[in-house]
Image (cartoon, rainbow over all chains, first blue to last red):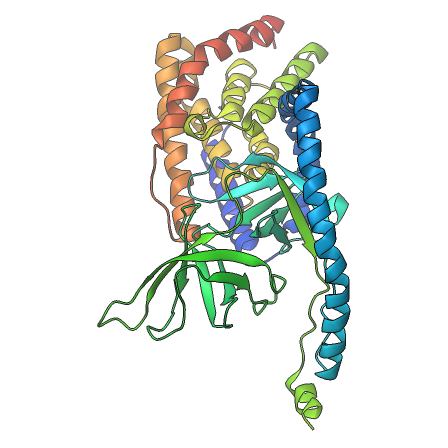
Length: 281
Length: 158
């Protein structure tokens, strides 16, 4: 063993502790992580090859009959959706003009990018997944991720060709929601279980019922407004406690969805109190 | 160092990072071995003159990027692993493979516990679950890695 090896280990340990602290508190080290991502990317891509082969085999081995059947179902669905979309256009125009009357800001349709899940983090302490789009496609930290059924989570870590998504069911995650029916606001936190969210600080008198749909309220400034998040499953009012016990089930299929959408929203600009005051006049 | 050995090592590291990333069903994922640590063990045991503590920084950073842990956590773990290997080098080198496996088990176990502590401190919430699982599989895999290391590195007289 080289001399002073113990001291060297101590130096490295102190160095990494400082690194960990910096990484946890500030974002200066993000470029380092990003460039190290280039080193890891080839191995990650190779690891996904068997999966891609299996998927390709599954696709090419599908029977013609099944494909035709699927095609029929899809075109039927498409017809229904198109009919809805036709009405949507006129409704959107109507909504726009009504909003103009109210002099409210326009709600622009969000741009999305389709991505697929390449891995689920085996770490039992967190509920995270890894997707196959990264910084090179313009993915950014804090970006909202949806699946076909609702809000799934947000990007927390971007590498060049992949990104890490924290799901809404993670116990470190919370997002502002509102009840679709009446607009009551609440905060939905993850519980660590994939099929359960908890609404915290809901007063006992709040009008929330089982079956209510919770949508993102956009108040945190991170998630876009109006995407479905969860359905309320349990409402318990415990006498003597100031807050109701409300549980909800995420509408997104957190454990099943393979194809996800990354949403690009034009960041809502912060309105300074000064402007707000002038606007009121 | 011979070019052949460098190629072997790069290939082994590539494979290790690939296996580290391999998606696994939930039940088995508890038992995912510490592949990179295995390769580090091989490198430090069979080519001690070339590989030392400096390995900890690049490999640690790459592991942190791979696992999304705070940058630096795996640097400590790899550095500790290498230091312990160097400290016990003479004994480990003379041990038979089963004893080496046992030492490796204890080392990986200790690193798992440190990893768990760091997670608990940083996220203020963690339950220790099956910390021993990766250590078991890593120890079971060691004899094969020993053969691979012996064949690829020791034989080249590095």
